[in-house]
Structure formats: C-alpha cells, structure tokens
Image (cartoon, rainbow, N blue to C red):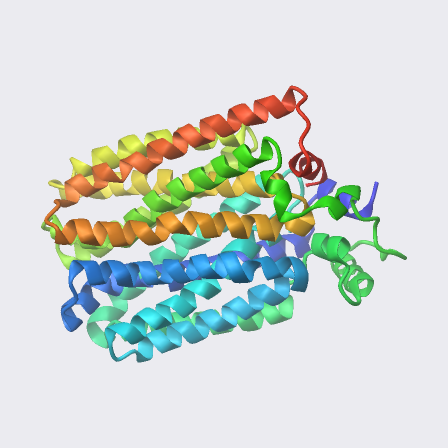
Length: 448
C-alpha cells in the first residue's frame, strides 16, 4: 500500500484536520465577500437611486466574476498547485473588497465585485478539492459538506455585521471588514496551509519529494525515499475524457444539476432580504430573514455531510432538491406572516444549500487527482450561468411588477429540474456498477 493510501485509510492527523479547518475558514470568508452585497444592496439602492434591474446587475456581478474565475483561472490549480492559486485568490479578494469600499459610483462598484467574484471563483474550485484530498476516506464526504457551510456561515456573519455596522458607519464599513478579514486569512494560509499531496504526486512539481516529506513529517509519519508511483490512468486524463462515451451524459447531468442548485440558491440568498422588504417587512426584518436563510444553509450542509456516509449521495441530493421545490412554494404563501416566513426561510436555506453540498460531494469522487480542480472548475463555471442569471432575472421580474410570492414559485422550477437530473445521474451510476466500462471516472473512483 502506497503512502497516499495509508494516509487516506488511516485516522485523521492534527495536520489534516488543520488543513480542512483552514479550507472551511477560507470558504467562510469567501461567503462573506461574495454575499455581503445581498445585505447592503437595499441601502446602496436607496442611496444611489438604483432601479430593481440595476440591483440585479449588482447582485450578479460578483457571481459573473466567480464564473470567469472558475472557468479561466481555477484550472491552473492542476498546474501551479492548489495552495498557490488559493493564496492568490485570497489576496485578490481582499483588494476587491477594498475597492468596493472606495467605490464612488455604480460602475466602480460593479467592477470591484467582478474582481472579488473572480477570486472567489478560483477558491470555489480549489478549496473543496484540497479539503477532499486532505480528508481520509471515511470523512471525505463530511469534509466537503463542511466546506460548503463556509458560504452560509460567511453570509450569516455578513448579515450580522450589516446589522451592527450599517447605521453607525454606513455600508462601506462592511466591505472594509471583509477586506481586513481576507487579508488576515491570507497571512494565516501563507504560514499554515499545506500543498495537496495528491497534486505533488500526480503533477510532480519542482522539489515535490522534499515538500511531500515535510507534509508527512507534520502528520507524524516517516519520510519516503521517492515519490509514489503515478496512477497508470493519469497519462490518459484530459478534458476530452469528460465527454467520451456515456461519460458525456454523466457530465451533462452533473452540470445541469449543479446549475439548477446554483440558480435556486443564489436567487434566494441574493434576493431574500430585498423581497421580504417588498412584501412589507422592515429593513431589519429583511436582514433577519437573510441571516436565518444562511443559518439554515449551514445546517443543511452539515446534515448532508453526516447523512452522506449513510445514504448514497445522489439519492440524498435528489431528495434535497425535491423537498426544496416544495419548500419554496410554501415560502411563497407564508410571506404574510413574519414568524412563519422566518421559520420557512430556515428550511429553504437548509435544503437549497444542502443541494449545493450534495453536488460538491459527488463531483470530486468522479475525477482523478490531476484533473479534479479542472473538472470542478468547469462544473462551477457552467453552474454559475444559473447563479449569474438568477439575480438578474429576479430584478427584471420585480421591475416588471411581479409580486415576491410569484417569484419564489418560479424559482421552484429549477429545483425540480435538479431533482430529475440527479435521479438520472444515479441511474447512470447504477449502469456503471453493473459492469459498464468507464474511462476516467471509474479509475478515479477507485483512486479517490
């Protein structure tokens, strides 16, 4: 048994736990940076006289940058390393938040959000992969799901920060806090975040053996004299392999499910505070609704991580999608009662973020180490089409006179599509288990 297999089959060392916790904390800051606009957006709209469609553009700008970063920058992680690209993303995000705080008009603020979003997109692709590669086999699903809770926790902190800072210091203070927190985390990552062992073995950068041995020593393990043998399949791994044979259908189903999850999640996370205001609630009640939605998202991701070790992830994710669609409809009829609406907001967040977590649990098990960041980056980029368009579409619907209740019903449709896609993906998995040969995914599953 090779050293990587020994690490993945053994108990989690303190160094592994620290790496996963760092990834979770970085994702938390990403969530703060990306979703802060959801809470300060109504205040900015009043101060600058923005229309609902302009608010939609503002809410979508960070997500558009995220898609760009995931598609064009994140794949570099498979060549330059997960650690280096993650740290670069943190530094860029910190600058983007600072630029947002200094913005003097709508165009400058949108540009700053694009920069921040691109940095977050890089980390959205690399952090789940890095966490999955440092977790052992038993805790991999939980580790990935916990990483997903970072967005919810970051959103909760953004909402609380907005409540505390908005009145005395203004909306710019929220971005300043985000910039400082991201810079501090960059310093911590520079000191404590290790490189992925899977990357060092699969891609063999300069001084890979020495770097691997330093990581092994930090785990309390003995050094090795040479790098473990590369997987035989690694020479065959290429983007084209995602679309060969029945792999093409599986890849498309993953993308469709991920896009559906992102569409519903980012509609609700971006617009819930504003739509609660439109439904007649106060600014503070709207912020409370957004915070409770995010808290529900944290619980949903943790619950999915716990259940993923007991229930097949594709089946579990399909259930999350289906119940989420029903809960969105329930939310649409509960807006007349503050207490009921806030309670249902928790359930909506739980189910929508749980659906996102489910897709993140599924994807890294499909691809080998040298292609995971590329594959996840492509899936993240494609799914961001839904994330970008959802706030824009909601803004145009609101400007066209649609009631908040109707908008929640409309966005239940993508959740139904996600459920159907995940069910079909599970059937494709059943075909695989009955003996159909796959090129890359089958090997990757055994090597994960």
